[in-house]
Image (cartoon, rainbow, N blue to C red; front, side):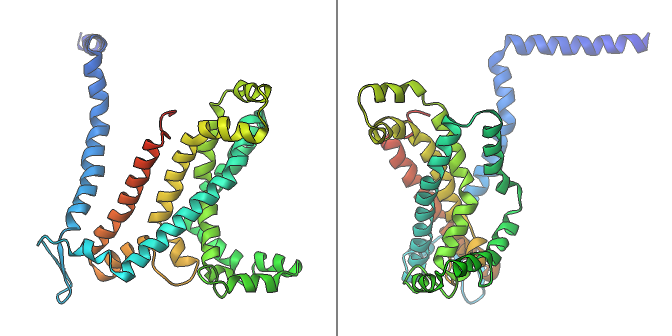
Length: 313
């Protein structure tokens, strides 16, 4: 009797629960949302607010310890010349990487959305995402070899007879260095390579949603291809560009591995946070530096919303 009544009882409980959740869709929705909301509110936002809270603490330079005494000195220190130079250097690199990623990503995304079909589209998806399957550090180290003297880039430039032109280019201020692997332009190449897939896919998704007959109608009305691009295609693709730029801009702002491996000496925001927290133990100053990317991204999102970039999302 026990072996047959227990399954029936369990089945009855499951049936009652299923009926109850079906009659209470709002309760069922809340039940589904509670775990991710707890995770988001406690782990994600909780740790972020704890970090921001510690940015107001005091760091004692003599005892090298953090004191729970509130001060705004850490934020004032951000405006010192050395720290402001770090912020400007990081912001300039993130902006350059984002602009270059848009220029490189748009033609490929357009071809994927408009012309590639079937297996060809699958090939492009795999080709775009293939670098993302490899280890980030391995790719960064690989580029140090590629860009170093004796690497494939120098071999190719030497075969083309452009070595003197490259040396003259690397001698320019704010661009070059002794070699490509120790120059700002080499660092720019690696950043753009690493984050380019994050720009291609959002733009491709935005272009997929643009009806083809809009471009045909624009052409029928006498618009040149350049006019159709400026007034029809580009405005409709802006949400994808904005989404991709959020990835490339924010990821470049916070990266600390590439600035350590490629390029000349000079701290970025990510390496400064790593140095302050890992080497010096000045967690309040490290936390203050982490506020900079948050503020910059917040300003960018506000401007993008004001320009209507999110209206088509």
